[in-house]
Length: 260
Image: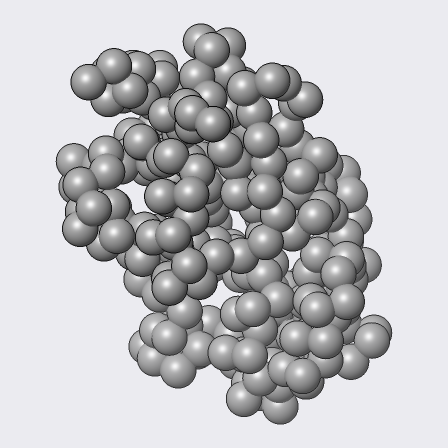
């Protein structure tokens, strides 16, 4: 059996769906990996497209690349998925496989937005006073809630998480009680976002710099309307020369390297 040269698309985001659609429209064989079953329906059914569910460990990736005839890697994971990005770029470099990361455009700071460099500077560093004694809504994902656990007695913290058992377990482990957790899938429309903040009398909201696609623009608008401080955690540094926000460049990159 002949294995056709294939693009490995690291997915799980709405951006990756758009990338996949662009690739298969050009007849490019594409294998998408997602970590959860809930992400699989994002992608269209197409002869050129295969979706694989399940996380890959660093030790599994080299065999995965060989097994599936991977000739190009496109990383369209979340802007904060720095661990998988670092792992894959190192392996791609070692195996001389062309790699390109698609990263959605970042937004300019809103009127009520404060950007901090990382989670540690907010929870245990110079920006911690912005949380003290405040009613704070955390929209940073369940995995990061443990950073805020030690602050449960110094601020009134609320968490918005995805509606998965694992996410709920992580929130509870970080000290959040049932009356301070809301589980829902994005996107969250502006009227609902506003109503939630008002219901909990939120004074500050912590979010990631995930761009408009990640709901950041809606949060900026609501923060300005309600006079709430939006605290934005900056993205990890870009990989210079290996990152683009242009979808057309992704297709061109794949076509060029698949033809070589």
